[in-house]
Image (spheres, rainbow, N blue to C red):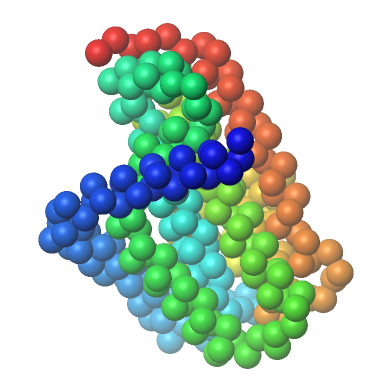
Length: 263
């Protein structure tokens, strides 16, 4: 069953990619526009650190590494979980009726309904920033540090995906996309350029208990750049996966209360 589900999702992705490539010029300009927009993020960091060489103990290279990781997490989530992000349109058009009638997992179908390949520009830029930050910050690589980076990327991606699932779950009740959810997705992408400790202890506590951004960004970053060596830091992203439980529950409650919006 799992193998069949993976094959089905791969088929969905292939269809989305072929659809995107039908309009190659539009696709390339979209990638170019998003890449230029995200380059401004890097330039803003450089300009700020020209005036302030160190912010709360973090250098430009540390921050570029941090920003690159968050950018990569967000880009992958936006690429593969786009179906949840645009779920309001699916509900308004009553397309979810067809999803429920098909003998396949509805989460898999929603994920496969949209695959935003155009986000590859942001993804590549995130990788470049990570590579640059790792080299310039002189990260002393060990197996645990490589594992830490892997855990940050995977768990951070799933955290952003969970937030998109919450947005989709709430659409069952509102029939509209909830723009305030952008505070937790696009908002954190912007605020996550910097280690979260620079915003103060209260903000750090909220981002640990309410939505555990710190577990996929701040604490493992400290281990990665050598500021702390606590044994638990490489594993700190893993507890953030517990956040997926309320995300799933909100989605399930929404599905149970779904009433067709008509066509």
